[in-house]
Every structure is written in structure tokens, then in C-alpha cells.
Length: 127
Length: 289
Image (cartoon, rainbow over all chains, first blue to last red; front, side, top):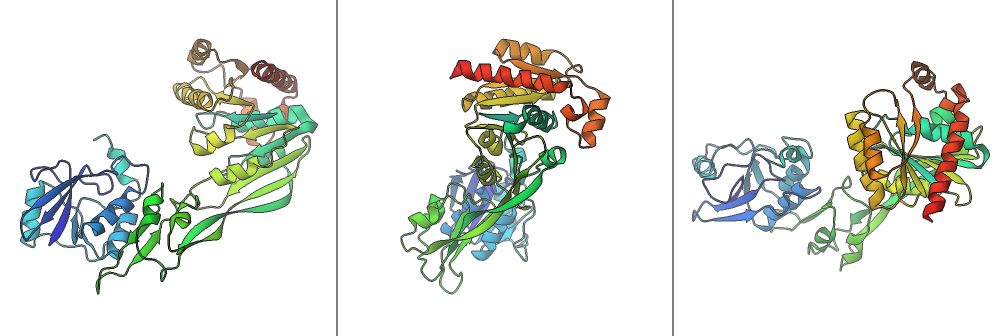
């Protein structure tokens, strides 16, 4: 199964980025093979609609579950309509989050619903 | 002649200046309220609105049975307002989602669609109200429909009412964002109203930068001129920006203004000041053209 974590860096040692639209990196992890691909978020500094762009990217990459801190309303809407599950409130190192996910310790949100309002991630752009 | 009254900082006195300038020049003046999210010139000019005009913009929609989910519409959208969800057999239904709060009605999506699956529907964005008011020639204001995010199309619609042969006074919204740029652009002159406070100076500097970028000559009016410090003067001196008028901080001015009485109605002696201000602007504009 392909899962995607938002990350502050491009390795499994990086911390999970609390933002979805404006995270620094995406780590797309295959739970079967334990291979991963790190993609820089090209939309991190975009003007608007970045959650929309990133959600369609998840669909294109055949991601089945997104693990992140927070989701905005537009992103949550698209992920749900594309049949992609979301786990929000994820913190700590990417590799630890992957392990917790594999052991079934992270619960998929029953309905993919936004955890923050639009433009939430913009406050932390310089972080 | 078109003069836009703008400011960086809000609440410095744009409408105070715009309404009094309009009333001082009288018969030849058309007042245009381009602060379409919160027009307030009418409170002071008390116009009789005679015409309402609805402003429509197009909104894209999709004929989903024609769509091949190629994604060209989404990649052509500068504002990220479209998401195309490709169908996955037995799992996901193909969809095209439009996020209208991000859409600028540019029409690119329907233009690029190879299947002609995207069509446009008119949608109400706001109104233009036209009328007459005592002491001026005519009155126009725009009103953005509540819940709409983008005021620019309404500002543009108000600006279409500019009468090039008359004196047009535009009251702008505060700040230096798109609707303000649109209100100042194409004007012959821009009055920047500020106050001698750190916020007043900071936002004035932004507004000056904006007016330079769009090449509209600007001058400054300092409201509540006897408070704060003299850093506005120093800045204007250094940047060679004329200070056109100073209005002191007086309780009486604030009291009458809060009752909807324009400055020049409460204090007729200011009429001369505003006429001189207009002559000064004419000289500046004349020199530049």
C-alpha cells in the first residue's frame, strides 16, 4: 500500500510537517516493499489553492492514505472524493509514524474532514 | 480628469477627503465609490439612487459525460481553482471540481478543453448603483455581493462609469492589494491620505511604491496632522512627494463626521482649501503630461 507523509525534510529521520498544503516535502512510502520516494512540495509557496494541487497529486501518485498534521477544507474534500483516506494529528519522525501506521496504531479519520480553516499553513511559511 | 483618493493604512480619512473634495468642486464632479466591499461615501453625499445594474461574471461548469479527465483545464488554471479526479475502476468516480472562491472567471479552462466539456454560466457578482446627489453632478458606487471573494470585477465596472470630460473623484479601499491597484490605475493623480503614526508612515511607503509601479503621480494629505511625529514630512521630503494639505486633529471635526456631515459642510472655510488642492493637482498633472 502506498501512503504519503508530509515531512519537513526528505529522509525518514525528518519530522512530520504539520501542514498539508504548504509542507516542505512529501514522502511517499510503500508499506509492502519499504521503498520510499521524497518529493519536494512545488506548491509550498504558491499563492492559493495549494491544498487542491497537492490533493490531485496524491491521486496521481496512487496514494491510498495521507498522514499529516492538518488538512484544509478543499484538500479534505478532494481526498475524500478521490477515495483517499487521511490520518491527521500525526507528529514526530516520519519513520516512527510509518511504524505506528504499520502496526495499526494510527486511526484513519472516519470521514475525511478538515482540521483547519483555509490558509492555516500560511502563518508558518517562514518556519 | 480622474483623481483617486487612496491610502495605505485604513481609517486615515479617504472618504473624508474624497467627499469634501467632490463637494468643493461641485457641478462638474462625478463621485465614484470603488470601496465595493464597504462603500460609505453615500453616508455623506446622501445620493438618490436611480439605477441599479447587476454585474455578472462567468462561472465554469462541466458536462461530465464529455470529459475525458485529461486534466488540461486544471493545469491551465493560474489560480488552482480546478481539481480533476481521474476515475479508478469500481473505486472512484471521475470528477471535475471547481473551487469558485478561487476562480477569476478568466475563461482559460473552457478555452483549452479539447472536448468542449466546459461551458460558462453567468453568475451575479455585485451591483453598480447610479444616482444624483446635491452639490455634485453624479454619484456611482459599486457593491460586491456578500460572500464573494474578489472585488476587482466590481471596481472595474464602477470605473467604466468614468466620464473623461468631467472631474471624477474615486474613493478607493485601503491597502495596496488588487482592488486598490485597480482603483488607482489609469487615474491622472492619486491622493494618499495618511496620519503621522508609525503605521501611517509604513503603509504610506507601501502605497507610494504602488503608485510608482503603476506610474500614477501621487501627493500626500496628512490627516490628524498635529499628533505623532514628523517622520511623514521627512519621508515625503526625501522622496520628493508633495504634501498637499494638512488637517488637524479636532474633536469637532470627528463629531460632525460621525453624524454623516462632510467636512466642508461643517467647516465651509475648508472649501477654499480643497479648491486650492485641486489647482495644485492640476499644476502637477499639467507639468507631468
